[in-house]
Structures are given as structure tokens and as C-alpha cells.
Image (cartoon, rainbow, N blue to C red; front, side):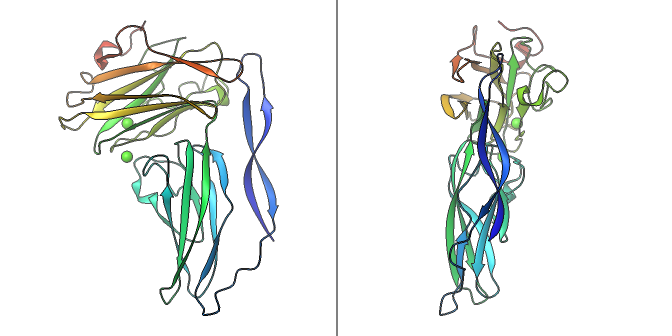
Length: 303
Ligand SMILES: [Ca+2]
Ligand SMILES: [Ca+2]
């Protein structure tokens, strides 16, 4: 019998000024192993993967491959994912660390900031080169407000931003972006804060901003800035996906060109998100022009 940690959804948190959000807590469950794992009669290796796992996007799960055989080595890969390469065999998602899209060892951490289902494969190889493989599923769940940004060019730096109507000034300490990833630390409790999970600077993203318990009286305004294409003249296609709870509520796509200075490069105001008491939300387009040079929007109140 093995004891493994697992994530389970438990209580509902409901406050008058906040959206009802499912709280996810860590607990410990006892798992009774099926038949004991033994090598095949010809000595070839056998392997069994851990059960399907579920966690909030951006938090890690631990995966395990129990194998029988001589001199076993284990290699992990992902065979299906919502978006290519936007996951890591790591405790924490780092968009710039593409080394950890494979892993070795019997037990490995796994995470992604992109909501969706991942099929993960463990292949074991014994001393004689004989192999066996198993697969398991990881679900990265949505929770509260999640805004995902990705783009389709390497060696380019695009940035996700989020301001609220209380102080709608972009590229200031009130903005949630690469220079200021947790702007609400002094003013709000942890579940109500905006968090930028990762700042990708070497291309393709993703970047993700989350608010686990969004306020009802707040417009969460989403912006995308093409910081630098490092001189490349061709456009990149930026994609923004918005989740309210587990519902994917909007997807936006726009070509941007970023070969000028950061200040002269385009800033795209994507839209704003407002939550309803039942946990649903409304996404509305911005007032005024949605595309301006960053210099036209940085630090000043916007309509
Ligand atoms: Ca970036
Ligand atoms: Ca990257």
C-alpha cells in the first residue's frame, strides 16, 4: 500500500463581495496498489503510471512510474496538450526554460499555466534496451479569472498586462505585468490579488495572469504589449484566452508588429472582464481605440 498526496475539490467559498469559487485543498488519500508489479516472464520490463491527477493551472502535481525490471531508466514526455510545449516537468512554470519539457526518473513534478488536459507518457528502458510504457492524464484546472497569452514567433518578447478600473493606468505600479507581477500585495488578501505567473522573453509565451477570487465590482482590463521583436519585421500573432472558473469565455487573436522601440511598439487593449455573483462573467471590448503605441497609453488614465 502506498500513500500519495492528491488534490481534491472541497468546500465552496461564498462572500457577499466575492464570486463563489471552489476552494482546492491538499489532502492525503491511501491508494491500494493493484496486483504487484513484476517483470514479464522473459525478463522484459513492465511499468504502471500513477492515476490521473488534477490541480489548479500553475501548481504542480507529482507523477510516478512504478517499474519492474533490471537497471530501469525512466523518461517522461507529453503526447497530447492544449498547446504545444506549454508545460514543464518542474515544480514551477518558467516559460523561458524549455529544457524541462522532458524528464527522467521514477517520480517527477509536472505543471502548466495553460488550462486543459495533458496526456503524459513514461517509457522505461532496462539494461538490455528493452522498453515498456504507460500513460496518465493531468488536468490543469481553471479557477477564478485566468488570462492566457501566447504568440507564434520565437525570439520575440510580448507582455501581458492587467489593470483594474480603480486605477486604470497601464505600465505603472497599478498594472500587473512583467515589472510588477503582484501589484496588490499591500492592499488585498492573497486570493484576490492579480498574479503574473511567468514573463516569457525568448518567444512564444505563454504568460498567464490569475485572480483566484475576483471581486464583483471590478473591471479586470486586459492588455498586450509587443515589447520587442529583436528586429524581426514580420508580425507575430498574439492569442489571448480568458477563463472564468472552468469556462473558457473568450478568445482573441491579433497580428502585431514589434520592430520599433518598446515605447513605439503597439499596445493592444483586448477588453475587460467583470464577474457576476454566480461565478459567470462578461467580457466587453475597450472603449476608444484598441491599438496604440505604448507611449500613448503608459501612465495616463484611459477611457
Ligand atoms: Ca514577455
Ligand atoms: Ca519561451
